[in-house]
Length: 281
Ligand SMILES: Nc1ncnc2c1ncn2[C@@H]1O[C@H](COP(=O)(O)OP(=O)(O)OP(=O)(O)O)[C@@H](O)[C@H]1O
Ligand SMILES: CC(C)(CO)[C@@H](O)C(=O)[O-]
Ligand code: BAL
Image 1: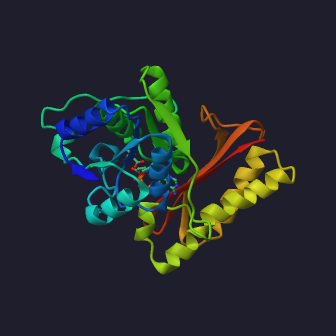
Image 2: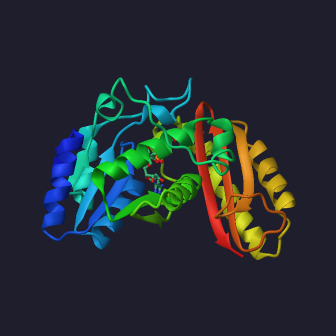
Image 3: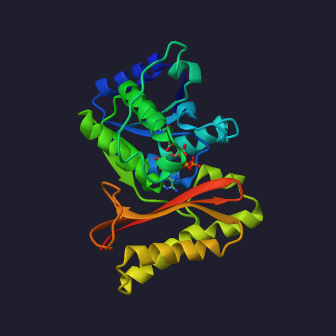
């Protein structure tokens, strides 16, 4: 596995692989890899001969007062995990390589970026779509792999790819969880032992909602209130949002029917965590 830092180098590696007749799979990440990322890399390697993983903590998707500076970074550890999972190249550019001082172009998807995480992180998805489209132009993959843990991010990127006729297939991948249900996330490392326990409130409320739906609860407003009340019982938790929406257009729904996404963002102490479940009812 090679680690490269410049656009020119990653283009050269991909061109060589393409010349050899290989399909290219791409896994964009912000690093500090865990089993969730590894599952994306393994899937990419199953479906493509050559896999590029990008590791870049993208400043334009962080708001003022968010954790851009403190976001965990460990390239040595990441390269071991990526290599074991089957990556051929890690693309690890500097901020200057991606955003030179004369940089002026941004990509913005409207409407679905204003809901859910977009409400509490204004500008976040503009940063995500800008960096992802830059990476797509650099890597020119056949397929790109994204985790459903960031369900809104997947919907936004699929919208961008459709709207801009990008020639790449987006593959959403299932959420990987710890044994006790907590969705894996690089930000879990911020949690103290007490917060780590309290963080279970996210997955537990989602799993119990799924049971309630199976037992016939189809009123979205009632279910949403129930989830909120359950989370409010956890003293270390502060709700950012709990939403029950259509899984494709993220429009709020009244009746739990069809493609349903229950998505939530909750602060546990100072750490903002997200989780969701998507169901066909
Ligand atoms: N638990 C998980 N299961 C499946 N995919 C995941 C999981 N966690 C992250 N991913 C996916 O990995 C890709 C890179 O995500 P990122 O590097 O931001 O990791 P993260 O753990 O989500 O970090 P953060 O703490 O910022 O939420 C994204 O497509 C994301 O959805
Ligand atoms: C897609 C992404 C790598 C863009 O910076 C990031 O938002 C992430 O890690 O999910
Ligand atoms: N996985 C989403 C990246 C972010 O929270 O900025």
